[in-house]
Image (cartoon, rainbow, N blue to C red; front, side):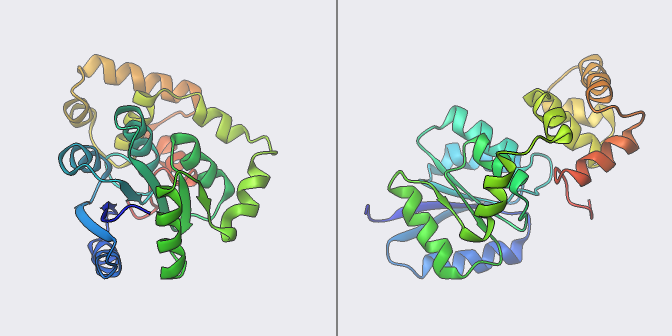
Length: 217
C-alpha cells in the first residue's frame, strides 16, 4: 500500500467536508490536499493539487459529480474517483460507475467502510458498498426509459440541463460554458426534444426526479 495517499474532497456542504477532512487526516497514510464545493471547482483542483483519489459527492451545483467524474477520467485517467453520496438507487450507482468511478459508498456508511473503500481503489480494485450492491446489480438487468433518455444526451447537453435546472438564465449558461447564445438555445431545443419536455419547468422536474440536481436547488 503506497504511503501518503493524496485525497481531494468534493462536496457542496462545508460541514461534510470538514468532517471528512478530520477523519481522513487522522490516518497516517492519508492526506487531504484540497476541497471543492462544486463540480467545476473539482476539475480545476485536480489539475492543481494532483490527488490520488477524489471522494466525490453526486449532487453538486454547476456540474454534478457524475459529469465531473466523467471529465476527470477523460483528462486525468490516473486519478481514482470514489463516489460518496446519499443516493442509494441502483441507477445512480450505475451512472457513477459508468462515468468512471472506481467505487461507491453511501454517506451513512461507517468511517471504517470509507477507509476500506479508499484503500481498495488505490490497489486498482473496485469497491461497491454491500448496502447498494443489490440495487446496482438489479439496475444492470432492468430496462429504464428515463435512463435511456438520459444516456442519449451529449456531455454538453447534460451540462446545459443542470445549469438551466438550477435556475441560471440562458445568457449566464452561455457565459459559464464559454458558448455562444445561439448554441445554448440549440442545446436547450435538443433537450426539450430528447426528454419530451415542453418548458424549462419540465426540465427542472426531470433533473430533480433523476437526481441530477437536489430538490432544494
